[in-house]
Length: 482
Figure 1: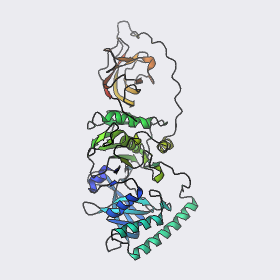
Figure 2: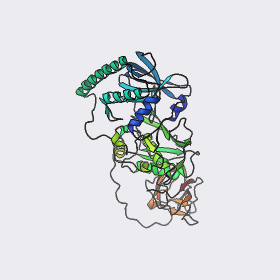
Figure 3: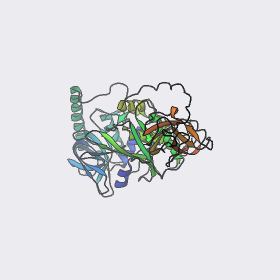
Figure 4: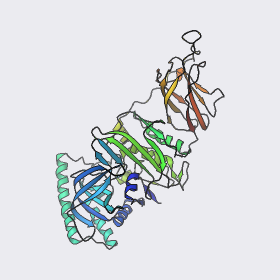
């Protein structure tokens, strides 16, 4: 079964070279990387220089002191430079979900390809400062031996002089790793693999919003809401809520290159390691589905994975973690990434901490009669809201949380009026005692739709008050799950 990588859109569009379809096993990944690479080199990162490209995106030029050249032309340079998408310029940083990231001084094995402009660009990178390459569950020596075998099979054997250089570099690296480990500078994982990884920065707020772009088909919306619900119910204070005014956009668009299902671009502040925005794109080039369809890619599965990047999680690298939602690949018809797994949950808890389980709701109280105007003959003020956020599984019989912010909310009489399937002509009314966090400028209601379709929400201060001019609209559908 063909499987696909989640890769960065901007990088592929800029370099015009991405084509990463691959099978499920790590061995086949290595075979592909070795055979398609323009060059395979190992060495120490000497310098990383980040800058703004002509397209306004941040890129990094990386200079590598070559320890050995495993695959390249007749010349074996002592150093070479290549480009990687993302980086930090001043106090502005950009990360792409799976683009290689390089740090000065680290020993690495790098696969390089040739960009449209003739320059070299990194397509894969494996750190060599742990003595073992977790992505393949191989020692450094075992990995080099497999690369040598693959090059022999395509009649591009490693030159004897370069094989000797690779052995020498490997020995120096292992000696260095041992010294660093002994001094505590490297945290070695000798027990059960940690099935989560971090991109680095995180949100410093518990309320993160996102906007649904008009490019998304209507059937994507409940699936995306379900993806969000997986992370919102992970036991942390972090909440992702839809907001039409958010700077974080979810869209459907074309992504250059084949095999790229989706990408998440994260902007952050390096000095505080704070995420400030993200953009998530589903690749329009693929056929998408929202039910159990073996010939389509599942919106909810891919969405859940990509939202994990939006909150700062990266791909786990140990091969035993392949069942986690944040694992880097997905198959056509695959539904298992709809929900998050133990490693994913451990990851988000490590970043954002846990919250206590919610207490039981207080017993219901009788609904008081409508509030009378404070002055005889004076109608209550008309509420207005500047924004409405929504969270939950957008399906009938499932609770949906509506959070309104605005002005003129009367705390003794505010009501949410919801119209749509299952509501009478006068609407489904959620009255003051059922509202949470009620103040003059904010209120939260929980609504359980009785059917699917389009719904609208307005506000009013008591049953005799005038309804707000603004109306919030959302769609509910039955989400098929297995």
